[in-house]
Length: 280
Image 1 (spheres, one colour):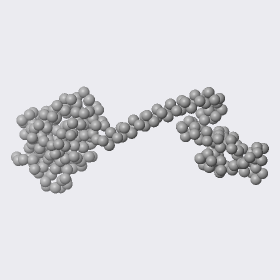
Image 2 (tube, rainbow, N blue to C red):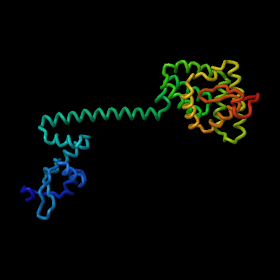
Image 3 (cartoon, rainbow, N blue to C red):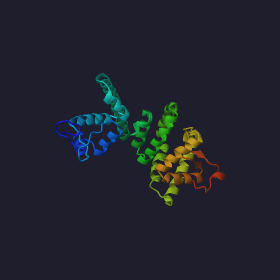
Image 4 (cartoon, rainbow, N blue to C red):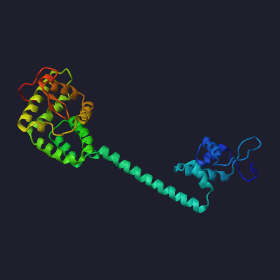
């Protein structure tokens, strides 16, 4: 006989937990929450459970694992068959909705791994691919990509115009030379004399492009200074040598990175190093 006067085998709390696939601690927690009735104890003071407790505990565990709050589990265990079936159907619908959302998240993660198309319009993706085809350093391409993400998100209506200008610029050998030179800058240390020479050549190139095409040819994004500062920070974090190169360019008459502008000689903060010659 067990503690409740029932015939048949009885189970210890450890055996009950093992059969139901939970821990002893979980069984005790369900007792404390009033989900699983406390059994009577045997003469030695130990809890003894009948087979029905295993079935009840498995039902509780299944509902809890499905995400049903324990307070709701108590209600469902006391519900009639129709109410219980309706509640289970509702839980199933919710779980299927969660599965669909998780699948969408997996697809977004897959797109992130796949490349640039996660957060960029197709025009910008094509522009980045064109940079790669021209031999632009991948680090520069990544800086460009990270810059275009907030730009496109902030002003999506301007992307088409920006990309039209970029396509025009990429047809200009001088502009391509500028991008190729930027890539070489990333392999220079701050004290490398070649970085200063590179800044000389870039300053000459920027000046030449501005004279031939107008100031707007060099700075064509038209973003506000605070946003340009944010974009510059993204570039400097991704490619630290770019910060020193920007300092050297300022000494040579150009300031900024995202928003390149001429600097008056008295505001340059250093010697005028621009000299005639090709980009090194």
